[in-house]
Length: 109
Image (tube, rainbow, N blue to C red):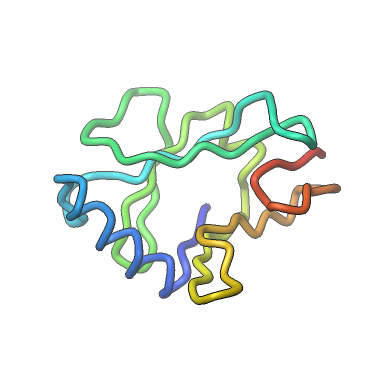
């Protein structure tokens, strides 16, 4: 399962509405691809449809779609949001990551 903190859920809802998505019916698509300074990099975008290869979760009122391959890397991850002057924006708290880069956008196992 992938969890969403309360602060991330509030920010996701606002951004979805700003981009013309409905937080009640549409999804946040989370994925992993090769790249970044640590070898694997997170992907985060909004989507209106799921595929048969997706696993779907809902936490804090946010629906999350993850393809099965990415899910193996993301089991137990929490999507968090840190705002303010020193905030980083969206951050993935991934217990599977052995190493992460300084910006928190990439990781390795």
